[in-house]
Length: 61
Length: 442
Ligand SMILES: Cc1cc2nc3c(=O)[nH]c(=O)nc-3n(C[C@H](O)[C@H](O)[C@H](O)COP(=O)(O)OP(=O)(O)OC[C@H]3O[C@@H](n4cnc5c(N)ncnc54)[C@H](O)[C@@H]3O)c2cc1C
Ligand code: SF4
Ligand code: SF4
Image (cartoon, rainbow over all chains, first blue to last red; front, top):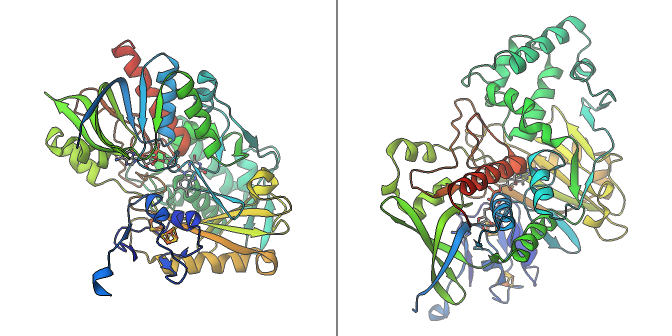
């Protein structure tokens, strides 16, 4: 599951522009639409503050 | 993990405008140059995000078309695809539009905001004295300086707006000294101002091409992990790319990552206490850029300065200068705001709301035809300026305590004061490139 570190995310919205699924929206903070996100990992590479990561939640399921 | 080793004359960490200008200047003179950039894209805060067919800036929009940045492009033969803004700006104040007088004389501009000729003349003389005779103290704010001559609300709002746009800080917090020194110095480079026709990333691509044509390398997704220092002399870096870690030996290391990261990469034991304190005390500034799109222009001129608003500082109808920033038949606009105080607390959500409220209140066609495409906040680790010229401003020099380790970019500046934005970064790049050329041959 994609997670954003709210302590370091500045809300620049760079990630939003690279998401192929249109799953992100920056509006001061970052909103993630989990229904749209297909975990392609693209946005993680394009976050200038390294605030995005893919948390492994498989063991919770 | 296998450790590869390579050797260069100069390794540059970061592909921001400071890093690429420096790399291009050195590669052009025959230095074997490597640029290592952590992101998959180049340019840092002088780049462009392509989104739904529109071009959104990551930073630099207003490109200085004369002075040091242009001279770097000319010297290395890089393509400078920038169109000048040829139409005079307008000012929106109290729901009225004021045209900038065609003669461009400060006295005529100030007279547009205040009818009391004596007051305007006193103020103008005070400014002239500050610029040509004795600059005010670094501890005096621009507002305190202005209050010596005027309390006129419109005049104050004019200076406040200019200061907030070019200095990213309001008149009550800005150093009057830095403000006036810049106006006779680096800010002159913004005459004229232009917009890059395909977004600022085209300028960065042009520099990258020069570096590569001259035998240098620009690697993306290549993150600096460590600056190697031996006997207080920089001797290379460790970078991590897609294929693992590589040690790169180099005669000089130039960091474009900002002084704070430079210290962390090299190890703080190499720097003296005073320097570390100055680095910790740097004040990064916060600005917000909102991108609005429409099927028709929302304003008839490229540059509108908005005075006495809650937050909005300027509204740029960029398509009017560079149609290539939007798909055919569409228009793109950028608006800028800053918080009430750069040093005081602010709430991001509140800042977004106030910016949008100002658009609704001040740009009549925004409500009818405008659609917000993107909201970008720049602060903290991704600031608008890395070291804002507030009162008491300390400039951090390019050279560090570690021999052959330099900083370039907007976290550092020349000795005699603040060097703002893209021309400031180009200036730091030029100073460092000159120093390297004087110290050793390729
Ligand atoms: C929204 C906004 C609008 C602006 N508008 C203007 C304007 O209109 N005109 C103007 O002149 N200026 C403007 N500025 C200011 C200008 O953008 C900056 O001053 C300038 O771009 C800073 O460049 P820099 O060389 O310091 O490097 P940066 O752009 O900060 O680049 C640093 C690079 O280093 C990379 N990096 C960081 N850590 C590492 C690492 N460990 N390893 C490898 N690489 C690393 C980063 O990814 C980045 O690419 C604006 C800024 C912002 C944010
Ligand atoms: S790119 Fe990173 S810092 Fe910017 S909004 Fe996305 S998560 Fe936040
Ligand atoms: S992981 Fe992929 S789909 Fe999910 S938000 Fe990031 S870019 Fe979009």
